[in-house]
Image (cartoon, rainbow, N blue to C red):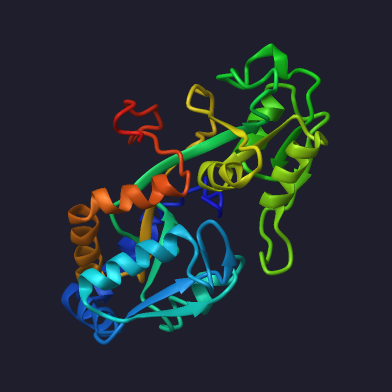
Length: 284
């Protein structure tokens, strides 16, 4: 996701050492008491379209509104840039109770069940010679200038394919109130400074749809070499908040169609559980 979480650490030894010292019921009661009963308190970035912004225009804003309505609670936000320190300064400080979008498996949060799966994409002009491309192994990419986020999985793929020499790198972790690499990447494709942009699907899909004329989005579902280019996206809560997690899981399950409709409206490319293309009717 926009955090490019590709390394998942399992601290089994630490868990085994700590387990005897914490009674499960006590820990659950303590963390559950932190969740507000009077509002849906959401941790979010104030300037991170298409995910969220203070004006409530992102798809995570819309999903938060849906969840709040189903809970019959008012919606409250704690705003903080989605960069280093985000979880520590929001969720862990008990200033809010849920992050609407977080990559599955990351140890900073307790993940709900995933509510969508997306992958990285290649964004090109609709009339480009690359518009019918399906894989980064295509020889037509040789000698092309690719826009890549520094340190992201597509940059590794580009390096393995020998495509990194002419690549233009963009920053990974930024304060979107000041800098917007995603919009720069799209602008560079439009201007011709780059031939294609390798982007996280929800970002590429949204900005390609906003461009005039719209750009072509090519889901990179055919890439089989590591690192993987698809991620399951969940909601994140504090570690130990199992009751709250189960409630959100139930809401995700019961409102799947409405959530999918929001994602589709924002141009989010959806793939299967294992990063494979969906059947046409399921991808609508």
